[in-house]
Length: 479
Image (cartoon, rainbow, N blue to C red):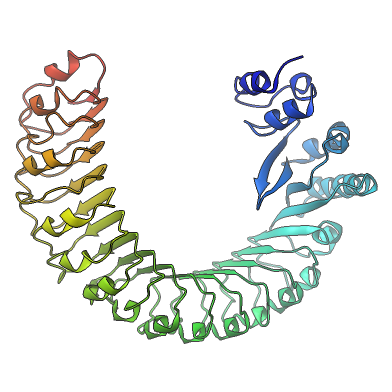
């Protein structure tokens, strides 16, 4: 009898489906077979919230017709909960598939298998033909259902947790407020969606996405006390986030290209952990002042102001700032003791010296900072592994020789940089990207023992890469 570790080793040889002959050897073999590649008989097992779930994807009517072949497998020990994913339209093949899947579900129920459906309904005109499947649906996507008159078939679905609407022509979504387990709702390109009143009173709602819709208000979300995450993007009529006031569980807010002018409401969001704001206009960061739970911020604006407020957000781990012309120094970030990733793009910084105290910094990226001409006094943090200085007028990177943990260096499109001096001897350096730069040679990195990849394409002044090619263990891309 094969031992479990041998079964795991055999299972890894198969990139697609694992043959039933191997998977049926034992429960251990089945676990391995269904956890790699395409599983066995289309069944893949994964752990969701600490519980094993088996998933089966039905892509077309021919596949549905083979359900009898997998029925034995699904009811064979060990039996675990099952998620069946089905994509359907209004055509005859799909309606035939519905009949087959309905019969299949009756058999599963008779064997005591716990199961739910994940449905993708494309271009349907009415939900009634799919009623039996909808009644067991946990996840529903309505895609391009422009002629669907109402959501009457989606009311009071007792298993429904997630629903996604893409390019649907409906104006009334109120039916879904009767689905008491609903946790995640997404609207994208729904031109008739001007109000979120259909979400009124959803007590379990945790996540909300609205993209490219003419919504004017988020007022209905006041009645969703468990809301943790909201993202609004490209909603031209949405001017206020005031409705988020009082949502004590709110952890993530994302606003992209919406004419929201006042972020003061964030001052009351004391549980906020993540904030994303992308806008062509001004972005004021003063409302983030004092949010000690904030771990990640990503702002991209025509002009980002009040960046000094971030020094009071002492829990920050990831900071991305783009478009802060007035940000000249990074000294205001020195109080961020947990900062591990920093990205600065199109800002006015002149120096990186203030970062030397950030012992937790692992990744630093700087793009399009026209005032950053020198790294002369930069003493790299001891744990810095990845650094990018791109499209900047730097002339030297000699100070990087203090960054003994560096694994990846990117200095692409720095035309005034003529030498890679400073990287010589770095023991952990694996990858160097220096395309479109002004370097004349690669001698400085030739002796880096861990080096495996170099990109120096588009370096007009580069004379030779022979010193790297002779090593034989470095992948070199050059002109």
